[in-house]
Every structure is written in structure tokens, then in C-alpha cells.
Image (cartoon, rainbow, N blue to C red; front, side, top):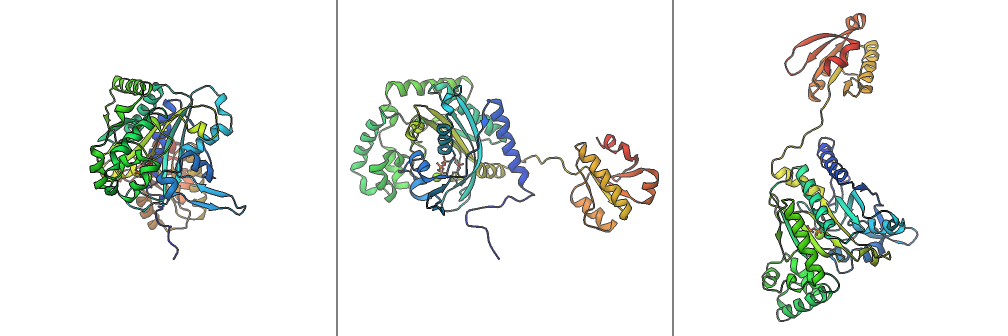
Length: 415
Ligand code: ATP
Ligand code: MG
């Protein structure tokens, strides 16, 4: 027997309606905000992520699915969506489009992680990238959109955590102060954070290690180091969010995993699942496009993990509406009847009604059983009588009531 690779999952036909529901909501909300879909390849040249995500991140250091293709090129399966969108933006000259360029994607992502609840090696993201604006209004609209999406999906008990991590002008001062503070306690840090100390000390702030957390509690806060521009920007974002009644808590330890973030960063955290509570995260990235070789175009975006969203919905007992099922099942008694049943079913389908008939050659009794199992609303036996009269006896499965209906009127009757 061949098994599925570790950290991957099948979405089976009896569950796919849940995925379709979340994806439909994503598309609906994107349309409301005039955000258009972008599709980029599942794999890119590794360089895109080295430069786009950053070589001090967990993703690039430990989690990437990287391999040489037959042409000896280093290829990586996308671990996230933003870098590919940025690459496409530059490559397709999208800077000449009216700004901002508002894009969204629904994509598989690949990270070599230790699988656990809400953490997979192949997972899926709904992401939004808004490119070409540095204004705080863009941050507010993006965050509001994220919230609307989560509302539409039906996720409740959420906290919006907000922070600003400054820019290339003010962050170095903070990093200096942070290193200064951590210097005396370096030996107490976990191995990962020891490594982060030089390369990316900000990441120590969101370490999950208890000892590191305790050390960090007393660390200087970035809010006290922001330059005037970053401070003003952050205040404006907060004012705009408050104006639309969007509640948030300022969390000075939110830094996000990716190197490219500047200024606003945020996370929506659910209380319904434990350690993997972050269902959606995002932030502003004012240097990404330039770092990848493009012009000075700034952006902001977010990504939500679809598996995590479904986990939250499940844990909160939320019912996802299943699309209406089979309206009518035609049960033919013989070969000639089967041709008529096939024709009747096809006619209804052309009109947009879900109809089924026997396509495996079941006997009439087991056809009834089958119709019941697939939840058909009506069953109509097609025998020689029915063929002669051009009428069918429609049996309503919920109460057993029957009604004789002309073949031509079945659609109208059921509708
Ligand atoms: P975490 O702190 O949980 O590792 P992250 O900071 O690595 O998350 P992002 O890179 O910001 O996550 O990705 C955005 C979203 O994608 C996350 O909030 C989460 O919902 C989802 N996600 C990230 N990694 C995984 C994974 N391995 N399996 C399932 N979902 C994931
Ligand atoms: Mg991660």
C-alpha cells in the first residue's frame, strides 16, 4: 500500500463543500473590495524566496522544499504567496497600472515543518497583496477586509493584534537597544534565539520558548523607538480602524515571520484552537519590491491558512452550509425506460436542476436504497406504464407523499 506523504491531506468529496464555502467567501469579499485574482506558479526559482522572504527567516532556513530540476536549476515550491506576486508584479511591468494594484490568490503552500494540528507540509492560503500605496488608509482597508472575510466565514472569538515594527530608519536603533538588553542574558536564550541574536533579533520577540518569553517580557518596546513618520503612520491606522468599530489590541511582540515587513504588522488569533491560533497574519512590506529588483513600490498584504480556519470552525461547532443536493432520482425498470430516464435527467440538468438516474444497472429495490442514501428529494420510478402515459409518479422522500406529474412539467413542479 502507498500512503500519503507526511504532513499532507486529501480533501475528500464528502468534505470538499467546506473548502468551497471558504473559497467562495474569499472571492466574494475580494470582489467587494475590488481585489482581482492573480495566479502565479507553484514553484519559482529559489532566489525569489531567498531574497523575497529573507535568509534569516525560519521559512528559508529550515522549511523550504528546494530541489534541482533536470536542468540543474534550483527550484523551490512556494512556501508563501507574497514573494511570487512581487516577482510577477515586477516581471509584468505592473507598476505602470493604476495604483494601487489589488490582488488576491488561493494557493497551496509547502513548508517542511513538524506536522501537528493546524500545521501541515502542504497547506493552503487565501492571500491578498495591495501594491503601490504607502498610505495608512491602505493598511486600514486591508485589515478591514481581512476581518470581513473572517466574519463571512463565521469565525468568532477573534483578537486582532496590531503592532508597528518601524522602518529601515528607526528599526536599527531598536535592534541595538534590544541586543543591548539581551546581551547579559544571552546564555539563557534558546539555541534558535542565540542564532537570531545577531541575524534577526526582532524574531526573538515572538519565540514560543517559555524561558525566552520571560526574558522578553522586560525588553524595551519598539513603540518607544519609532521615528516620527512610523509613529504618525501607526496612529493613523489605529484611528481609521477605530472609526469603523474594529477592535484591536496593541501587541509589541508581534513581529511576523518574514523579513520583508515594515511598519504595520497584524495577526488575527482565535481562542478556539491552542498553539496554532493564528488564523491570519499580514503586514506592510515597503522594501520587498525594491529588494527583488523592482522600483520603489510599497505594499501590504495578509494570508489566512484555510486548514486552520476550518479547524477553528469545527472546534466552535460551526455548521458550514452544504450546497443543495439531488432534487430527483429517476429509477428505470428496464433498458428502454433507462433511455427515457437518462433523457429526463439530462433535460433537468440543462435547466440547472440536480438530477440523477441509474448508471450502474441496479435493480429497482437497490435503486430506492441508493436514492435514499444520496438524499434525493424525489424519486420517480420509470416503468412501461410511465412511458405509455408520459407521466411519472413523483414520490417525496421526506413524507412519502406521491404525485403524478407530466414528464414535461417535472421541472416546474419541483421548482
Ligand atoms: P506560525 O507562527 O503558525 O508558524 P507563520 O508566521 O509561519 O505561522 P505565515 O507565514 O504568516 O505563518 O502564514 C500565514 C498563515 O498561514 C498562518 O497564519 C497560518 O494560518 C497559515 N500557516 C502557516 N504555516 C502553516 C502550516 N505549516 N500549516 C498550516 N497552515 C499554516
Ligand atoms: Mg511558521
